[in-house]
Image (cartoon, rainbow, N blue to C red; front, side, top):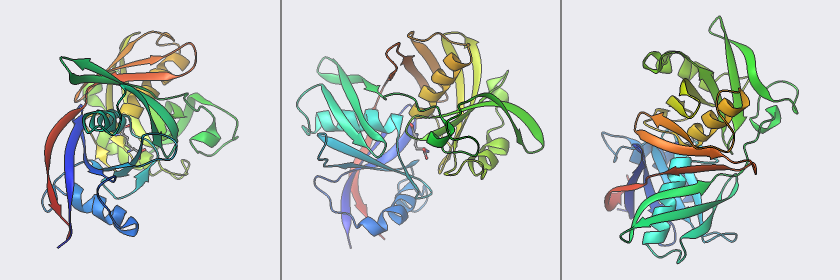
Length: 285
Ligand SMILES: N[C@@H](CCC[C@H](N)C(=O)O)C(=O)O
C-alpha cells in the first residue's frame, strides 16, 4: 500500500492536510481525487482540503491548494501562513522573511517569533485585482464591481466583487448571526455569471476598523476562516467608504481574528496565526 507523511495544520480553524513535496512523490493525475479522499472526515483525515508544499524555481517554496471537492484553487491566505510556518520550522528557509510562489503569483511572508516559536505570520498578499476580467465575471472586462446591484434567487443585492488571486463576492448584512450561508452561499458560488465560481462572503460592519465575517468557500462550503476572503472584505470596505485605507482592520471570523491592512502603497497585508494539529502517515486507498 502507498503511503505519505502528512501534517494537519490550521489557520483560525481553516484546516488542510499539508504534504511536503520536497520529500514525497504523489501522482499528479491523482491529486484531485486524493484531496477529496484525505478531506473526508469518515474515511480520510477530515479537512477543508489538501495543500502541497513544493519546490519552486522562483522562491524557496511553492504552495498548491486543493479544496475538499478536489478543485485546485489559485490562492489561500490561511494556507500561506501555515506553509510559511512549516517552511521555517522544517528549515526549507533560513530567513524570517521569504517569498512563496502561488498559482496567482509571488507573495512575501514574514515570520513573527516569540521565544523562538512562530507566534504569527504576516503575508504581503499583493495588490487586489478589481476589474471584471480579473474575477472573472460577465460584463465589461475593464469595469470594477463596487456596490453593483445583482439579482440572486429573485432578490436584488448590492454586492462588491474582486480578486485576491482568487475570486470573492461581498454582501453587507446587518446581523452576522443571520448570514444566509447555506441558502445564498452554494447558489452564488456556482452562478454562471462568475466564470470560475466564486467565494461568497457576508460582512457586518462593527465599526470602520472592525468587520464581522462569515464565508461560504468555493469548493469547500462553510469554513471557519478564509484569509483571502478577509483581505477581500477589508478591500471592499475601503472601496465602499466603510473603512480607512492604510489602517489595520480587524476581521472577526468564526475561528478568530485576522488583521488586514490595505496599505497606501497598494498591497494588502494579512497577519494571523498558524498552528500544527497532527502529523502522521496516510495510507492511500
Ligand atoms: N481558505 C482559503 C481559500 C481557499 C481557496 C478557495 N476556496 C478558492 O477556491 O478560491 C483562504 O484562507 O484564503
